[in-house]
Amino acid sequence: IMIGCEIDFDNNPHGTYFGGQVMTGKVTLKFPKTKLVKAIALHVSGYAETRWCERVTTNRRRRRRTFYGREDYLSSKTFLVGSNLSSQVQIEAGIHVYNFSCQIPVECPSSFEGLHGRVRYMANLTLLRPWKFDQNYTRCFTVLKVMDLNFDSPLLRVPAHSETSKTYCCWPCRSDPLSMQLTVSQTGFVPGQSVPLSVLVTNESHIPVEQLLVSLVMLVTYHSRPPSMPNSTSERLVVNTMRPGDSVLRNCKKLFNYELKVPATPPTCFNLCRIIQIAYQVEVEAVVKGCHQNEVVSVPVTVGTVPLVQQHVPIHPRGPGVGLGLGQEQGQGLVNQPLNVHGLNAGIEATAPPIDSSTPWAVDATIPPPNYQEAVHMRSTAAAVAAAAAAAAENEGDSDAEPEPIPPNTLSLDGSGYKPLYPVFDIPSPSAPAPTDYTQNYMAERAFVNPALDVGKDKGTWL
Image (cartoon, rainbow, N blue to C red; front, side, top):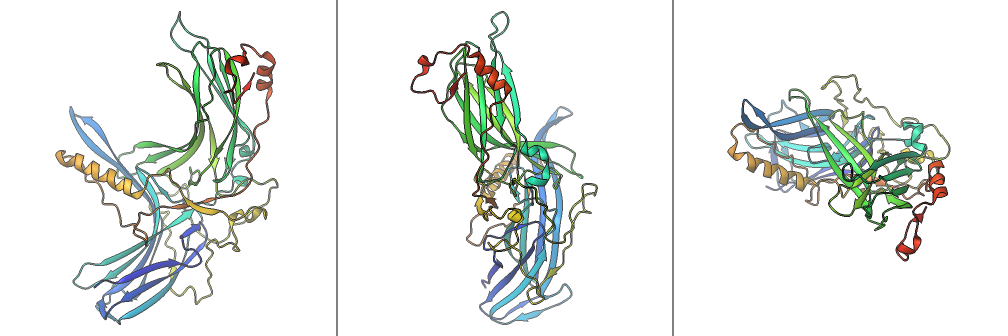
């Protein structure tokens, strides 16, 4: 008998919450006829897990070894009907609605879906049936870390600078250096803003630069935890890229100004999750002509959920919550929050972010509420399932290989794979970095310049 089940969140159709908010919702069950069950349980959970395989050689024998780790942040379970001790409960045909509420801990890391790990939050409804298999219905929701750039570090407001230099060929044919200098006006941004940057290319070599590639890159590091052996692996994802097509001839200097958009993406995370760390950096790559290695210069940036404002205004936590401390051992940070099925009747209101609710970015009245979008650069659930299937097929001939875990049922109501949503702001971006002393010195030199050689295709500033 097909049973209809819908898990809805109040005032939050997409199921997107910030840490510290109260999640409220309702479970709607449709029974076509009378049904006997042992109990109906609702479990709200939040956890992070990592898993990947590597080939290692031991005693001249090559085998695959699996590394994994897990951390739990939230676990709330309640019985809507019956209990573990009940034998049989008869549910009449028709529509049955159950309300629930749950406090989300403040120190929860943001939802994330990667190739070797994930941070996932879900509400799972289980129909425990006597002498039959249980039926499960799952609805995932997104939790976002409140990362206020105004309180993270004062260095986020300060311009950052990085430079690199590279020579080609070997002595005595070694060329003069190709130097690149990258400057950003600040290092703290939120999705929706643009990163203004200046790139100074000093090409004193005999090899021309064909084009520049400007990219925002997300660097994800995965760690294993006991009982698995300690290890780590990394993943590099290009969040956004632009190909302006600018070139720099040999023995020339040019200054370029760009604006790189920050799309929907999870915030930077180092301290809330000990098995998944997320960092960002802006990269500028000089593609040189011929069979030579390209030169890359980069500057680390921080992506938050509350933008920088001109005036420093204190923000207070919006609700109680117990999180995972850095000094706690694994298993001690699990927060068993009470799941109140009568929360709506008790006067607890949802704090999901409708337009007129108290929101983390309300520190500045001029900041409009953000939109919530999918991070298109992140690996989808379907891709992770395909990778797990490919790894399982590869392991068929390896008797020592450990089996890959079966991905949990994380399908949304429309049948598509679960994809977390992240806030995207519509606010002004910072201005481009002002010329510094090193730029003025280069402008004063004006060496090796012949603008007539590049008429009609020069988008930069000749120095």
